[in-house]
Image (cartoon, rainbow, N blue to C red; front, side, top):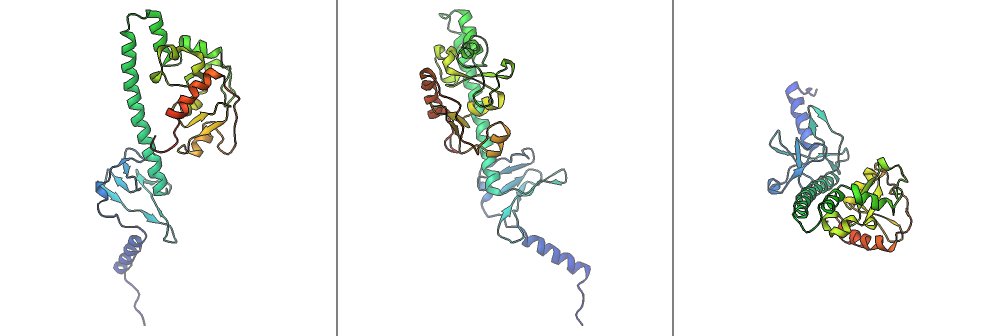
Length: 260
C-alpha cells in the first residue's frame, strides 16, 4: 500500500510547482537600464525587454506563465494587492514611452523658460508686444484672439464654447519666430485632451483635413480622449497659411516611430 505524502512533502511539492510556474531571471539582466513601471511607478521598474525590478525587494521578479506554459506575464503587488496580469513587451513599451515623454517634457519646459527670458531681454521690442508673445505660449491674449478669427471650434470634438477650448500652436511656440507666435493661422482651437494629443505629436492632420494617428499612441487612450481610432476622420481642409505650419508639425512633431 502506497504511503500518503506527509505535510512537509506536500509543502515541498507545492514549492516545486510554484517554481515551475515562473520563469528564471536571465543572467546579466541587472545591467540593463530601467524606467518606472507605468501604473506602479513608486514600487517597480522595468527594462526594455520587460523584466521587472522590485524596489522593495531590491531584486528582479520572475515572469509567471499562463496555464499552457507558453505565454509569460507580469503580476506585481502593492500593499498586498496583486495587479491584473500584463504582457511584458506591452508593459515595457508603455513604460519606456511614458519615460521618454516625461524627458521630452522636461527639456521643453527648460527650453521655453530660456526663450521667454530672451524675449523679455529684447528691449528693441515694445513691452506690450513682448507680453503678448510670452502669453501666446499658454494660448492666451492676442494669439488666442487671432486664432479665433480663423478657427471657430475644435476640429475633432466640435466643441465651440470658448471656455472649453485651448488656442494651440501648430508650429510650437518654442520653434516659432515672434511673428509666427502671434499668427492666428499658426493655431487651432482644441479641447484639452485633443490639445494634449496634438501638442505631443500623437495626432496630426493632412492639408486636406485627414486625421493622422501616431503608431505609438495607445488606441485605448485615444478612444478615451475623444478620438475613435477605428474610423477614418476628415476635419475639413486647412487654408494655405495653416498648411505651411502643418507641414512643420508633420515633419518635426508628429510621432511616426517610438524613437521620436
